[in-house]
Every structure is written in C-alpha cells, then in structure tokens.
Length: 538
Image (tube, rainbow, N blue to C red; front, side):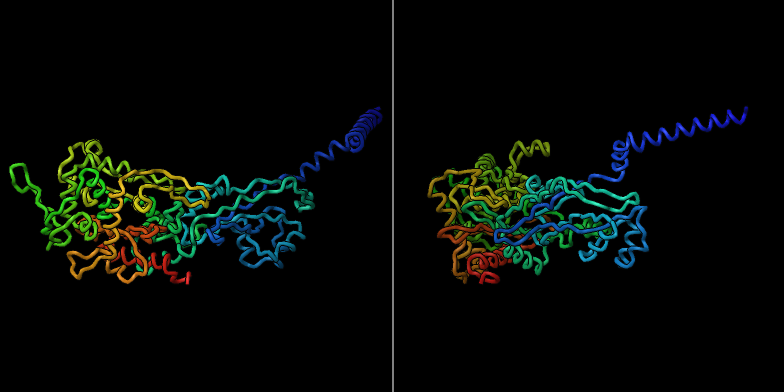
C-alpha cells in the first residue's frame, strides 16, 4: 500500500514536470526564446566625432580621432590575447581595465569575439590653445571656440545592437542609427601668422599678448597670449597639471582678452579727442619736464614728472601725441576734467565687452561715482591728472585697446571683432566726430612712427622701430608704470597702411619696460609680416 502511494506521488510529480517542460519548450517556446535572446543582446550608444576647426586657409586647428580599445570583463581569457597584444597592453588591461589598440590589431580581436570600443580624442595646434579652448571629460566645450560653438561641433548620437553568445563573445552587430559627425567650422585666424607671432614671443620669453585684426570687417587674424599651454591638454598627468596651475607666469590666462592692465600712453588719443571736443583750437605749452599742481592760492601741492626729465619744450597736441608728452596730457586732462573724459570714453565704449566670440573681461574706466562706490572716497584732481596718461585706476584688456584703435582707423566705425569666418560685417559702435578731429589724431599717430629731426625731445617715440619701413603706420607707444619694484608694461597699438588702413595691431608685454624699446620693435615685425611679405609670405 505504501509502495503504491509513493509510486503515485512520484508519477504525479513526473507528469507535472513533463507538462511544464512541454509548456516551456513547445507551447511557450517563442516567448522564452525571446527572453533568453534578450539576455544576450544589448544596445550600445555611439557618438560621431566632434567637428574639425580650420583656420582661414584650411589648416586644421582642432580635430578628433577615434582611438580603438578593449575593456576587461570576466569572459576575457588573458592567455588567448597574448599573441595579439603587447606586454604593455596586457598590463594596461589588467591594471586599468582598458587597453588601447593599434588599427592592425582590431581584426584579429574581433575574430575572437571581443567588442571594440572607440574613444574620441581631441588634438590641438598648441599655438592656438587660448583661442580654441578645450572640451571636458564629457566632450562638452568648456572654453574658447569649443565652448562658444559647442552646439555646432557636437557629434550626433547613433546606436548599435549587439548579439552575444552565452559566454559573452560578440556574434553579430547591427547598426540601428548611424552616428553623425559634428559640423566643421572655419575661423578667421591665419595659422601661419599665429605661429610666427608665437614663435617670436617665445624667443623673447616675456609674458604678453599680441592681436591682429582686419579693420574693415573685424576678422581676428591672430590672437596670441604668451606663455601658452604647449602640452597636449589630454596627455597631462597630475604632477604636470599642478606645475602648470602653480606657474607664476600663468600660461592658462588668455592675456589678450582676459588680462586687465594699465594702458599707459596708449590711452592718450582718447584724452586728445576729449580735449578737441572741448576746445576749438588746441593749446601750445612749454614742457619743462615736470608739471606742478598748485592750489588756488598758488602753492605747489604735487609735482608730476614727464618721462623726459629735460622736457619737450614748445609742444602742441600733435607733437604731444608724437613724443608722448606727459606734461601736455597732465595739463589738458585737468583742464577738461574727469567727467568729460569719462563721457568720451563711454562714447567709444572703451571699457565695454567687445562681443568677441570667446571669453573676455570688461575693463575699468573710472569716474567719480565709480571711485566713491569702490573706495568710499571722493575723486581728487590728482586722479584726473593720472588718468590723462593712462595710469591710476584705468584697467583695460589688449583687445579693448585694439578695438579703440580699429575705431580710429575707420574714422569712428567699430566692426565687431570675431573669430568665426562670416561674410557678414556687424558693427557694434559708430562715433561721429568732425573730420578735423580725426585728421589731427591720425597726423599725431603717424608722426609717432615717422617724425625725426635728430633730437630726442622731438622724435616720434616709435620712429627708431619704423624708420626704414616701406609702408606708413599710425600708432602709439605706451609705458604703464605698475610699481617701483617692477618694470612698466610695454605697449604699442596702431594701424596701417595709413593711406588705406587694413590691419590694426596691439602688442603688450607685461613688465616689459618702455613701449619704445620692446613693444614697438615687436609691432614692426608683425607689420613687416603683414605688409612686406616676410617669412612664410615671401
């Protein structure tokens, strides 16, 4: 009886098992097959390459490559890979879980059933680092052109269906959606000019910035900040990165658009314009080499020296621009006052953002209200005197100075400086002044580079740099004092050829000393390249 009961129970369980096996394998076969297959398939998202950035002549400035690699997983047999990988690749695979491949290795590893991944790597021309910028670890533009035009450059997502064996080997790959590369863009930059300027700055090895602009349409042909990040951004290890971050010369700073500096005498044309708008005729004075600021009772309160202590003697406005006579500009600045100077600075938008298509800082052109808000104190006559020679509280970027000189070159029209190539010219400002004022300023700036009577008191401050040039440049040197313990910032800003201005150039060297001795000779090299066809333009 007990035997029959056990047999009946066993038979019942056996029949139930047979039933469920039949149900799973026959009745529900398609359903379970779909489930099993789903465990051996997955969708992988892929992304197209980021767009290439070209210079105006078609040279690559930033571009991407897809670098193949394999990832370690529990199904990988390291021994089976040794015939196909180098010892270093095996070590990388074991230690980091990833091994980069050479193209010739891909086919053999795919035959083994391994899935080949691709990592996008971005490459840059180092001399253009501050212009192009970089992307972050997610491939999103984080600075420069990469950030501004990220939406254009970004590659589009695609997808791929992968079928694997139970052991994890790839059996089949089906592309569902093709990834698309991002758009290529062309910049106004002339890479040869950019490299030439950078290499020349490297020889000097002094921090600074140089910008070249087409005055007719605002195209930036070169924008160099030295020093630069010359290492490949994505190959920098933590030790090197800390060294770069702590470098006192600050190679990560784009001095051309983000550095704020006292402009020194480079600002004097603005003071001259403010004066000519106040006076029908410009005064002539005797420069003795010093200016005495006196009280209403005639008592000398402060003495301000000229850069030429022996003085420039009889000086009018044109000569004052030519020889950069501080005494003349002390005098006229105090005569017209800070309110008038500030109003003219605002007409030229001299401290405003220029709207260039990379990061920039706005400058500071002080006023009574600004000083009171900033320092909780009143504006003094001495502040106006220093403003007249570009000292005191004025801080501007090299790009803002360039924008001002481009406006002079165009007799008041300011094209927006830009790096993306475009047929459209956009103007950000238009200053309407009498032709007489433009002519006076241009004459003074031309004499800076061309006038010489053999005496230091009368010679143009940039004459020695441009004396044998086969073209004529209008420009201004600047020597901006920063502290007694450091050299002055060295400036030159100008445009040419004077008959039909095409290029404007600004040169600034941090603590480079006199504008006549450092910035002006460097500007001569740049104008030679542009107008004489030297170096690679020969």
